[in-house]
Image (tube, rainbow, N blue to C red; front, side, top):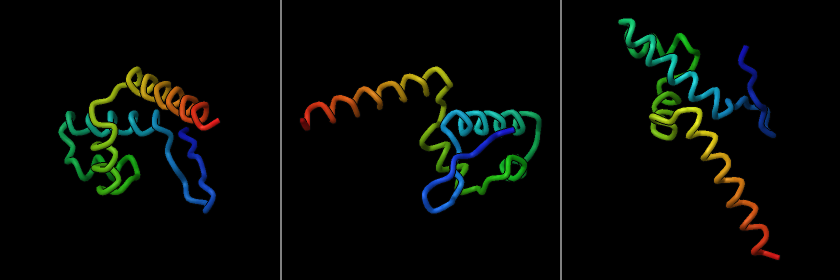
Length: 84
């Protein structure tokens, strides 16, 4: 079961790892002959969300996603340190 984070206004958000998994799931379904829009509906997101995710997370694997997260943490720590 995929659990979603909630924002301050109560909307649900997917974690980046979940997004990559869902993008992969759509590609598998398309490879099995399902229409793209049907595959998108099967994972319970809108077409707009799918294309936004695909633009941002594109061909990213879980390893690259972890590297990106680590890079963002390092840059955040650096920015905080330089402000003091």
